[in-house]
Length: 314
Image (spheres, rainbow, N blue to C red):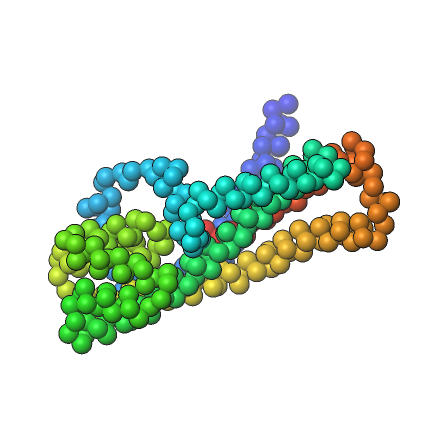
């Protein structure tokens, strides 16, 4: 028994070490493809010093956890909704309830009505997520242009607030309102560093938070703000390039997800149009309704799982 245990344990250990070696090898390949295995440059060293100084001066205080209302408000702001987030949520809930009632009245049953309501909620969530991603990409591109405009304005002799006013007038939404708010708060007597930090805390954009930290440190210690703007612009361009490379790597997974999710939905509507009698048991029998609800849940679960598989952490 001891010999058998030792043999099994040895085989298990060999398999674990082989798996670990393969995992480390693949991780190294991914880091090399993403450009993360390169040596530390001057820009990355500067960013590391900024981060360490920020963590040492301001990171000691734990940030206050935002309330549900603040998170919903930020979610609506990131999505670019013009209406209040409470109005949008009530409208979506009303549409889901209307879909449930209409499906139940037409004879679909409770399960199919719940599936229709869930489909509306999931569709709205996906649509909002795409709006947030498009708005975030536009925000990053505008931030690069804004940093260039600010650097040129500073070299031309404008003060920092004047450069921000120029950015707010030249750059459109969504970035123009951010710099306009900074100028407005500064004109009301708020300190410029506090105003920039307040604006950065209201958004989830990492580049804007880095910009706020860098400007606060530069205003405290002194230095060339124009060179700082150029350095931040180059860092932002490098991050955008890395994000595009990540999207290229995960493009196959995204395409597979769309095909695997769209195929059963397309086949369902096609069979309903070609042979309604063949699909009738799904609406009249309890077992068919359960199978239809299970299919909807399976598609939703598959979409969530493939979204998790396409996330690259770096």
